[in-house]
Length: 212
Image (cartoon, rainbow, N blue to C red):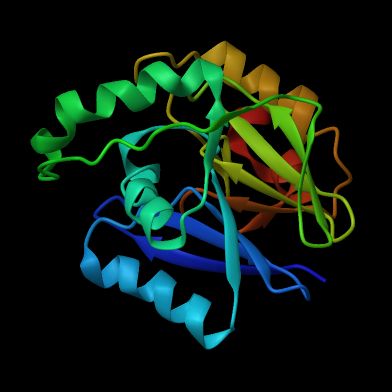
């Protein structure tokens, strides 16, 4: 059984997720740790639960989701994977990070690319990769069918959707991604979003104002 641990990091109140199962293997998703205290929170949880991080994977590469990748890669000597279409977004972070008070951004090296339709596996856990562009050109989400949840990044929020006014964003594309990739999942699937509290597919289909 996979456990989903969430942390709220950085001034953007970004949700970083750490998934782990009975094998002790863990993956870190969208590490937004912006300072030593936030990095220490992840490291303390890993140590307290005797976990072995094996990968960092990201839904997309906006600044609030990538701040801790390089440090965690070094700490645990693990690889990092991202969708190839979001590589330019990652490369751009160093050009504007100081505008948000993040000086000396440590750009991580990408070790592999995530592709739609592939299954990312760690321990006894399988995550289906689905391609959900609109908020970012290479945005993906991770679906665990065994326990019926989605790590969705900044695609769908409780009663809202991701912003589309950033470079590479497209409102119509985002709505189509949600309709065809998220809303086609069963209603009881939990959606763990990149910000705010979790929601469910069924609740958003019925109540999200962008789809009435």
